Image 1: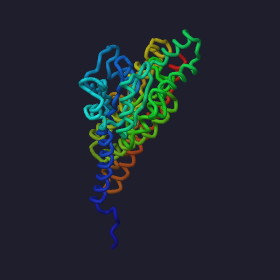
Image 2: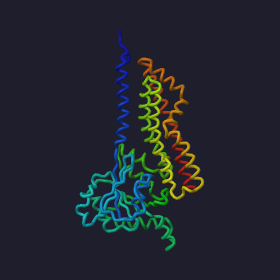
Image 3: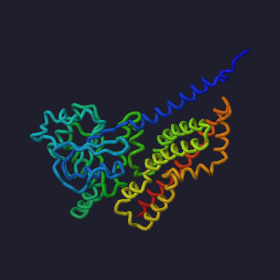
Amino acid sequence: MTTHPFSNNSIIESLISQAYQNAQSQIQDWQNTRIKIAIAGMSGAGKSSLINAILNQKIAPVGVIETTVEAKSYDSEHGITFVDLPGCGTTQFPFDSYIQKTNLASFDAIILVTSNRFYENDVQLYAQITQQLNIPCFVVRTKIDLAINDGLEDNGLTTEQVCQMVTDNIYQNLKPHRPKKVYLVSNRYRQDYDLQDLINDICLSLEGLKSAKFKAESAAYSKEAIYGKRKVIEEIALNYAISAALNGLNPVPALNVSVDATILLTMSRHILRFYGLTEQQMEHFMGAKQQKVQLQALKQSIIRWSAQFLAKESILQILKRLSTKLASKTIASWIPMVGQIVSAGIGFKMTISFAAELIDESEKKSLDLLQTLLES
């Protein structure tokens, strides 16, 4: 008699175990991925504000002008670190040993910041980076809104003329190793100018999981950036869906629901954060405009909507509304062999459907928030 390939429970258990381990490994790899970016420039150039704007969260203190005499690390909760480097060309950090002392070769990217003209120290540092290191270096001119206002009031220049003059001046200072692009940014008007281009290009300079993580965790200041998050987020949700499906094999109904709720809760918090929909993220995103009536109303609406995904008890209520599927899942888990596969399939379908709806709605609300902010 020919033996059916799935007639042995141990084969199914082995396949299920392997699938679960693969999904958990992917989740763990994501959590363990670390990105380290150096940021250099004179004090008062707006480095802290730039860090906070890139991540859409306040991790670096703003408003205190002091001379940086040692490297200062600012860590997000989810694996991205910015290091504010001390000035080069000083007694403690001379040019000839600066790269070694600051361990610049260990960084994934370097941002060189100025809010005025480039000083000789900045020029020499840029030359050393481009000549000695194979690390992407991004040249950023902050406070461009102030330069535009000055150009208009003092000389009657247009926005385009001021931006061109500033860019040309930086190119002139940094030749013969001029960068491909100079990023003109305003920490007050983050949706304008080149901040989104800077975020996009940093993401492109990274590889593999680092690129995916930076795309998911960084701010989105354009519709294209919001849309661009979807593929990464869907891949993360897939691993949680697989985990939920395999948790569906537990035949104990109470534990079954509890485990699914925990997975959905973790996944939901990730998705909401990736789209910038936590209360703290929305407040930082809106900045000084957050007192506008339309923005306040939208923020409160999003907070009320997202609350159901941020507490285990609320997610349990959502699962209760899926009682038919849950009942089928629990019953199927008692049936040997085929029942295990059916149960896993139901768990997967339920979780991936939950994730797809949450991603769709989160994307929509993120777009609404951006559009309302722009209209304000």
